[in-house]
Picture (cartoon, rainbow, N blue to C red):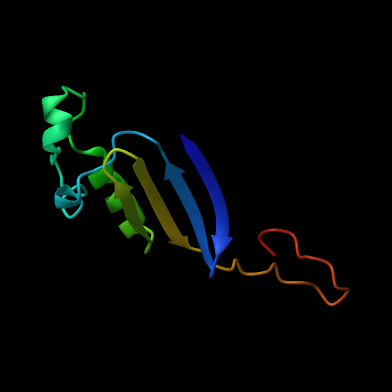
Length: 104
């Protein structure tokens, strides 16, 4: 498994890639649904409830972001989470050019 992070186009980008069994193309449209499990995962008795990707999607959505997947059956999958970055306001300065103490 490989995990990378970075910044692109004003977004924080987190990518998780594996070389596992991959996801069949027919299942890609449903894997972010709550409780959905692929037939291969069920057949191979891979543990899980089918909630992980739904929860990850809800978290990304709550932060105005998105999660996507690219997968090739038999070769692995790459999940990408993109979250918008925001600029924090700068601390106000006093006339001498120093940052004001909190509460002032």
